Image (cartoon, rainbow, N blue to C red; front, top):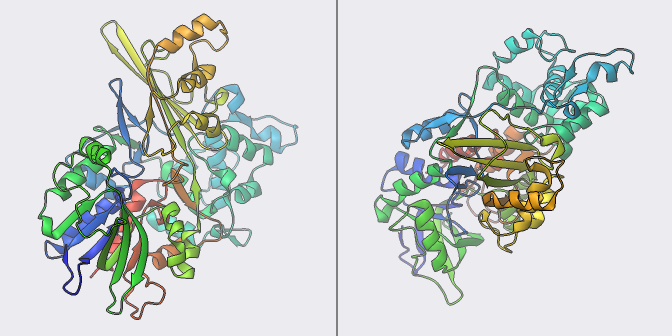
Length: 534
């Protein structure tokens, strides 16, 4: 990064806005491909890198408040990055549906109008059957989601087939991308069956958001691929961020720099084709200290730009601008973007998610307790349990994962007005809310026993991703959007009023990818953007 000769404005070949995993990965790959002669500056609005990736050590457990699981075969870019950074994966439990009586559904009885009964299906089996009926390609029994022919067909699926689903697949003469997933499932399953999935389905099924049917079908074709497996990162997902920041912060200072607490407020096209960016800078010593502890960036990752005006405005000139941002901050910038780009920015649905963790010094569960135990009787989309025993001492952690409407039960327990990281041990009402449903014996209403059980909770925390600046834990394309075309338009465009059609503005990230909900989507878009950077 250097000074512009005609003014005191700083200039850079590429400016990246957004210090989440996509922005950091874009920086990392640019330095690999372009070398030290291509200057790169990255600006993050908050006081920490990582965006929606957040790992917190709680009582000897790693609590993943952000992404926690990844498909090993379907996400090669992420797997390569994990290896390149010297990290390791660990097994993660497969997608699992609750199997208690309340969660099961007799589809045969429902579809026959009560004339005959059949096997009771889990919500995951119902979802799978709906997808199989919509695609009608497996050659298996469309009344039996467990027909081996379905599995054999599913195992052959690859990116080529997903592209077909995205662009060409149809049902009753209507392309799947044109309709919502709720509408699509309603064509092949009864209302009661769809309603069962909505209310008892695990993971974030999102049917009640009625997302793009093609995109959400692809999500589950990948997620339920019989030859793939789910893994987590042994050192915690945030180790990705820490290692990337360490690598980027140790390079030549003149060729690249990282900056926290710089929020983009304006972009202006210049006659020479470059872009002038204005940032609002905030000096927060506490954020710098936290970043050093959390991101292990000891040297250059600071608010160190010297050309600030009295109102803390920082100006930077760039040949290329990468907006590695989710929908929320991009919508705030929408008035400065071309109208058609603004419409595309608003073509994804932000999916709010909340996660809560509770460490118990004498847990009622053990290492064999399956996921979703008590999920049907708790305001949660998913519940996961972990257990550890050291000699005679045992300890456990439980994760409660929710989307609307269940997450609204937990949201009031967030205390901080600025919810920029997970809140730990803040509001004891969170523990009370937890014990309302997940105490050792839900039928025991003795106040003293419940208070004694509360004392066993040594650490607890909550993260509400619906709060700004993120607005969502993940995103999904709206019905009617052709994702492939939208991504192409967002990958490279010119600012409104630009005198040159050099298409040097680039939007990337999980929200605007063909692999939404996962880090892999952001990495894919980063590589596409880099192809357009000169």
